[in-house]
Length: 374
Image (cartoon, rainbow, N blue to C red; front, side, top):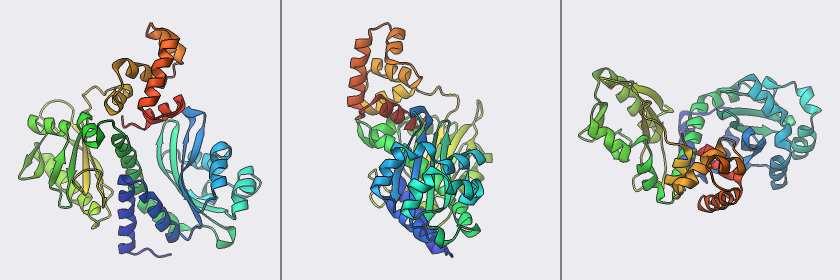
């Protein structure tokens, strides 16, 4: 297996395109499947808070009946997934052999009733995200006769892992913005995080309302001739370098997955700055950025996720309070008692919340709330 610089750049471009446009995950998975000589691949998610629910978010080479069966049953007995998380719960990258005894796997139900009928055996996987009980991973599979995945495959996954994790996180962030009742622009402007969109040279394209407030304040960062500059001279070199490398990747000229740094101010704790590459042929906004920068003030009190739903989906203040209580683990009856209202009234409000958020069940609502960037 050999992946040249040009092919690697295309894989990375496809990744950040998938962050902007969900249908592009299929293109990336197809390219990666071919690169590692796999016959099937999937992005799998699992959330223990939702009764251990797990499913294929997107997959190639896995028959529909097995996609359904995985969600209904095999997710709960996926001993390879469990072993991978146990061996490295935050950043696992490895093969079948690196996390579990293959003879134990051969005797397992998930192999004999799920993988074996599809002529799948060998696997190589990478964890995309792990937040408490929520985990997502990408996995590539092929028949036993094709041989085990080796070090060269792990090197490729290791090289791409920072990009895959960034793209997956950015994908979730943008999806929560896109489903806003007021559209992406309105949701960006209602975000408490300052967001800046940069072109392939690192120059400013646009910013949201929080970004405008940060620039107006001028104590941390300012805009000079279309270029962002930290107020503290000591931050400038690292800031310029991070923007340049990240924007180059989004423009298809580099391999940097972005990064994080502190932006200092004369008084108070420094702000957290995070940059991610971006690529889209049909941008979610009127501009087509090559990098997105998020700047968060750790001293600012975060809004509740219920309040985030209020901004994104037009919930009332009372409905947002109920959503927060449900997310905290309260039953509808318990939430009603805490809010000094009747259970019937709370259930009526819950139905309205489900309608506004286009969810069908309380578990879907909780999953939606967990996906909203905190």
